Length: 171
Length: 130
Image (cartoon, rainbow over all chains, first blue to last red; front, side, top):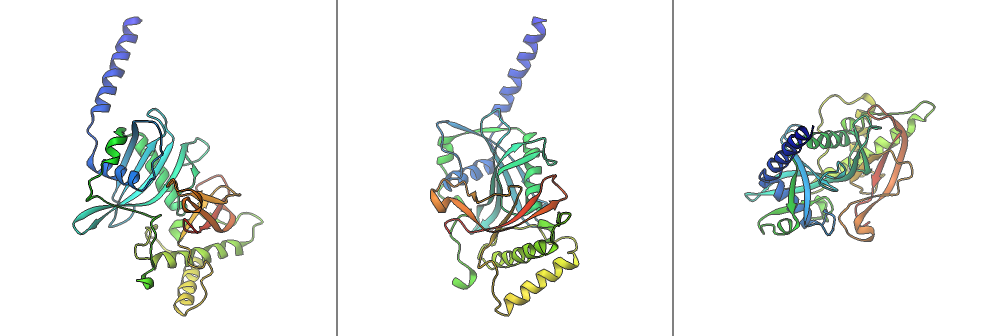
């Protein structure tokens, strides 16, 4: 029995090593750096924050959106979710933060997700956010150091829905 | 508009005018959003709008094109919620006070939501800082 327990523990350890050694995708790093630049990430004593993400190229025809989840803790399933659109600005890729919410997984909701702080948008948008959260839950997680999040390349273009925005007629 | 809130309907014994008013406010919010330099992305215009939705959207566009009053006074952001007493949503940008919150400009409901068991409200938000 002890041998089986030891073998299972070893497998878990190996799995965790592979999981944590997976290289952080640049797109995820840049998106997270934009969240930090726009003050959307929680201020805490933690030296690392845990993220998951998925890229959606279908829901908004002609547009690419990254759904990014920042988990409250490495082993938790609740946290913050962001919808970040990828656009081009003078040859640079821009990260446009268009939506955010806080969530918990909930069996009481048909979608499996309950929004604590609601996102912007209608039920269609909320369904897509909930589906992305469920999808990301199955994907690898990445631990990014707070130091790396603050060290964004100056050429990184970050925009957010909270930025002041003039109307076309005010130009 | 149909794609964003098409799952909502008037509950039993509810007043159908409330959903009509909500969609009129939403139509004008979408028009205001479209007039921004960088409009927020909304659900793609796939599928067919209901006759009522098409009429509401057409009336709002015609009214605004003719210089008619904007019932939401320039608001560009909207949402849905299951919380009947919502006062605001946090922008979660760590700014204190109004700059960090989007207060409710107007709220409509409750509506039945075909994708949730809970009553749902349509909310028009003030921009952060307003």
